[in-house]
Every structure is written in structure tokens, then in C-alpha cells.
Length: 433
Ligand code: UD1
View 1 (spheres, rainbow, N blue to C red):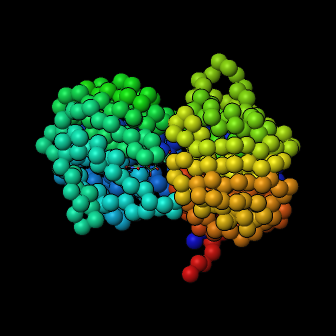
View 2 (cartoon, protein in one colour):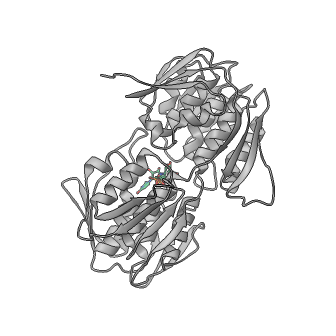
View 3 (cartoon, rainbow, N blue to C red):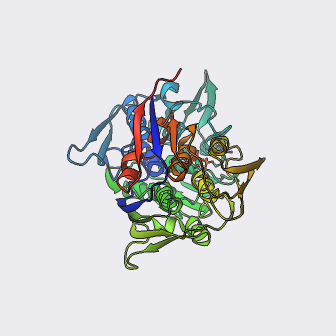
């Protein structure tokens, strides 16, 4: 198993480019299941979750070609439409596999997808996905651990898709994708507004779908009979971008980030600015969703009050990284998790490094301290692992992080990227019982 050894006390300087978004790419790839003809996606990041999606789509009868000269370009062709089973072996490695459900039942009249289990940050139901597809007249059953959805042809309907924690990103992706081939008009109320949903609607429209309103809580979809080939460039990864901006801030660095999705990160950038980490566009004429920015930081950081929220609020996927940052602020911060109330796996590990954290339910009080101390810690989920890397770079002494396969799910060669800006991180193999 791979592990990281991080020498603390480095300062990041330099310039990197932000890769394409994993969370956008996964439903975009699944959308190829809807098409008659090839779908070409550019700017697909090289991550283990993407490899898992390639494996899943291959098992589902798609031919997938990776451009030899540009590994970020994938062409996916929906070839054998008789395959309809997404096995637990793959689904359990990646919950996002559930986003093949809607496209498959819409185009192949049947989808059998292993029910995703729990995950490191608690119970993650898929009831909204199922409620939405049922509203479109899919028949849903649970058989031997698989969700089995069948439909002769889906029927457009008005659907309320809100749940106890607000909207669902992949739930919206599933229902919106399925509704493209439904008979008649579908309206999704309380749809997720995340940029990844907008990117998916853009691809679906390029395939011939008729979607309006993506990016707002009300999405309207006029069903069509068939979808065709299309080409699409995946938007930059706002969570990777935010993580590297926080990395620059925590090391008191000075870095330039290219293809930075500035306008998708307004909530975290506003908070970072108050804390003392400043992100400036280098040129105001550029595309605000993919521009070059400079990140600088004040030596003394201020504390913050942060609640995670659905987009455009502060993203839950940056909560852990932010906790590492404000653990070094002058004063007490309060962080409340409103999307996944159990998403605090990093609290115990950060505490091992000297962070002063007091958790009560879905809230953590962070008492700022003047330094963190290197320690052996364990990665537990993707973003929690990123938080430990950030803490390790600024800690006194060495930090070792085991189970970095969690990181490889969402950050391409993170150690190489950070080392190119002056970090000192070594990847090595470790035997774990
Ligand atoms: C996506 C992202 C993930 C991010 C999350 C929230 C991908 C691949 N993953 O996950 O990185 O942290 O959005 O921004 O894009 N819920 C229900 N019932 C459902 C579905 C969700 O109650 O059927 C709840 C969840 O438990 C959670 C909240 O709704 O409390 C939001 O989850 P959701 O937006 O669905 O997360 P994902 O789409 O799975």
C-alpha cells in the first residue's frame, strides 16, 4: 500500500494548472450510455475513480478509447446495450457508480446497480435518486443487494427532489439524464445547482437533449426520442483548485494557479480572504470559470465561522482542508457540517498532530494554535486525506500518511504537484496488516 512521508516546514511557490473535475467527469462519462454514437470528453483527469468508471462502462458494453497523444481525451461508444448489471465489486469502490442508473434505465429499459453501501462519513442514502426515477414511471425493486429499475419508456413528470439535507448532486444528475429520453416534459424542483450539474446539462444538450434551467433549483427537460454523438471539455475541478489555494495559504506561499474556476468558488474565496489568504485574478478579461490566479497569504491568519452548504455555499468537500488551515489561526473558529453531519474523520488525525479541536455533533470548535507537530496518521477518505497532507507540509518534523489510495481517487499525483512548488513529499510502499 502507498504511503506519504512529508517533511514539514516548506513554503509553496510556483505555478500549476488545475485538472478537469472528477465529479463532473463521472456523470458525463455515464451519460454516454444514453447516446447512439460516440461521446468524446476532453480534460478528463487521470484518477483512480476515472479508471473505475472506465472499468464499469466497459463491463456495461461500452467501447472506450483513450487518445495516445492526449490521455485526458476519452471517447466512449455505447456498443452492447444488452449489458445492464453494475456489480457490487465496482460500485463499492466508488459510490458515484450509481450515476449509471438513470442513463441505463432510460436507454436500455433496465438497469441493475448494486446498492452502494455506507462510506467513511456515514450513511449515504440513494432514496432521492430512486424517488425521482419512480416519478418518471420506472419500476424499482431491491433484489439481492441490487437496485433493479425497469421501464418501457420513462414518462415526464414534475418532481420535487429535495431531501433532509437539501438537494442531491448525483440524484439530480441521474434524474436529469434519464428524463432526456422520457416521453414529455419533466420539471425537477429543488434540483442541485452545482457547476457539475450545469456541465452535464451542457453535454446532454450537445447530444440533442432539451434542458433549460440547469444551475438553478428548477430544471426543465423536454424529452426527445434519441440522443447522438457529441464532444465536450470537462470543466476545471473546483475542489482541487480550492485545495491547492488552501495549500498555498497554509504554507504562507505565493503560487499561480492556471485554469482556476474562480466563479465556482466565490464562497470559499470570500472566507479565505477574511482569514488572510488572498486569491487574485491575474487578468479580469479571462473566463471567470477557468482563469489564472495568484494566491498569497498573510503570515498571521484570522479565525472563521464556517457552515457547509449546497452550492453556491461553502462546499463540504473543502471543509477538512479549511479545518487544517484555521487550526493555525489566531483565535477560535467554528466549523459546522450541514451536508454530511458525520464527515469528521480528519478530526482525530489532525488532533494527533497537535490541532486543538473540540467536536460536538456536527460542529467542531477549532482553537488556533501556533504550530502543528508531525506524526504518523492515516488517510480515511478523499478530502480528509488532503487535509492531512496540508497539515503535514506546515508541521514541525515529519508526517507519515498511510492509505494514500484515498487521495489518488481525487488528486492526480498530488505529491508531484506539490513537490513541483517546493513541498518535500515522498511516496513509498508500506505493508499494512
Ligand atoms: C456529490 C459529490 C461529493 C460531494 C457531495 C455534496 C460526486 C461524485 N460526489 O456526492 O464529492 O461531497 O455531492 O456536495 O459528485 N442524500 C439523501 N438522499 C439521496 C441522496 C443524498 O438524503 O438519495 C443526502 C446525502 O446523505 C447528503 C446530501 O443529501 O446529506 C447531499 O448528498 P449528495 O448531493 O447526493 O452527494 P453526492 O451526489 O453523492
